[in-house]
Image 1 (tube, rainbow, N blue to C red):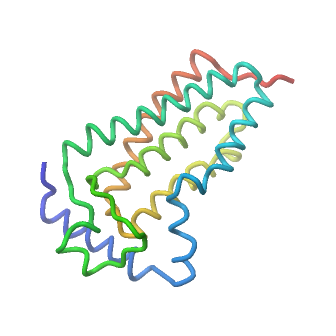
Image 2 (tube, helix red, strand yellow):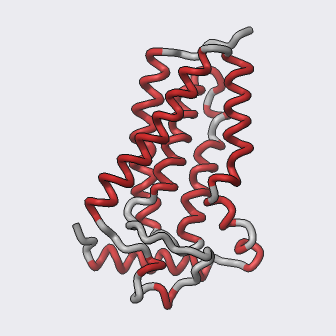
Image 3 (cartoon, rainbow, N blue to C red):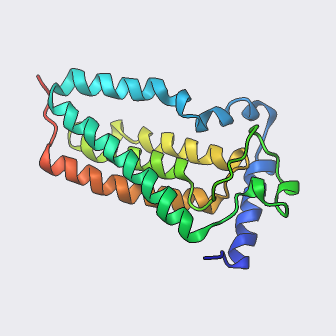
Length: 194
């Protein structure tokens, strides 16, 4: 399913803004790290330890829900959505590449719409938000969406996705994380150990 030329033009303009106009040398050394899974390992480890310490055996249901959320988001996005649209990544498009700066050493050969990084991280963020909301409230959980947004923004900043790719990925992820978060919260609500 091809993108309409008018949307492609808007998206390319937004990409050039983020990738060129809003870039800076000191950001070039920081922002690309946000897109690497390994960069976030300490956060994942913190969540696991926090959940097990505070919720005991009930935390394993939460961990299972978290894994299901990421797996569903990854599969639906990679196998269904991307296959439906077959949009070429900007870093692989010879008409777009001259106008952007590629800030990674490798551009994936996969399709661009929607961003799997954005989908997975917004799915995780929504899952964490919904499952922990009754215990911690919005004021202690808003950061999960900032985290997901940083990952999504980095994809555009380095030149491997268009802005609409990450916005579409965010919507897919929010929907999936909303479903799994609601499901876990309904069947296995969390209660602190003390």
